[in-house]
Length: 257
Image (cartoon, rainbow, N blue to C red; front, side, top):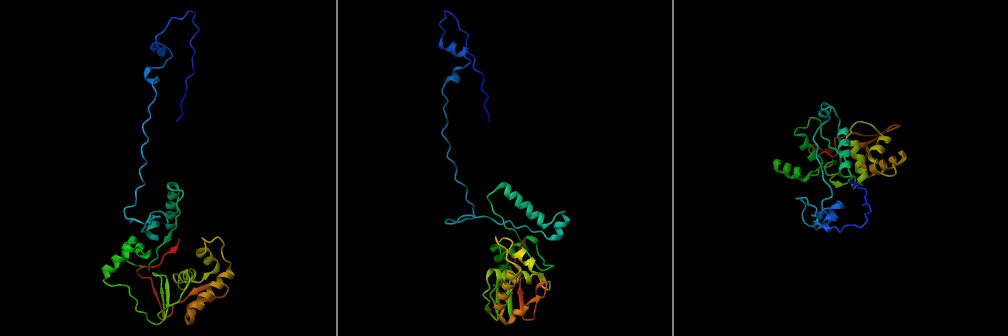
């Protein structure tokens, strides 16, 4: 807000001036008695403490939040949009409201024809603790493993068991296997793997590096390594075998959007 200052007018010189009462002098100068009084400033109000998120217990701090959006691709098209446009709109809004905020989007995957409300499927897929607890309560059983022989690719828990023993995959090795598993039967070229799995890395690997990652993954799959097949000149493909079990029906793992 700007303040406009009126030009100062000087009184004309008068010979033999008549004494003027102080109050009249103030009126001549255009300043009222109230204006002449010194301004009194109100004491600064204490800044209220930032409100705490109600669900955050003492000794912890809120570092962000999750907004579950339940909508499949067909419903998005019917609404005249796409999942990608929704994500970009939410990211744009977040940047406008809180420029310092960081965002990460993931799409929840479920088998075709899976029932239930979209938002409930999303919460289960993204491992929402409250949704998982509700599912256990409704089904009346825990998820205790009974390990059969063969390969168990547990996408919901991010692990691989070989004949009941953990395969010990690194995070990136599991992400690579998961990417192929969720696209069963489709050959994925090396460029797509780099673009989707290393998009956030400062230095993207070369296609030769992808081959190294696949060799390390296969070595940890031991005698089940042929579930990841090489398609010469193209890329890699996951083929399901009779001794491979994939756990993702109720809590499929998200893919990077």
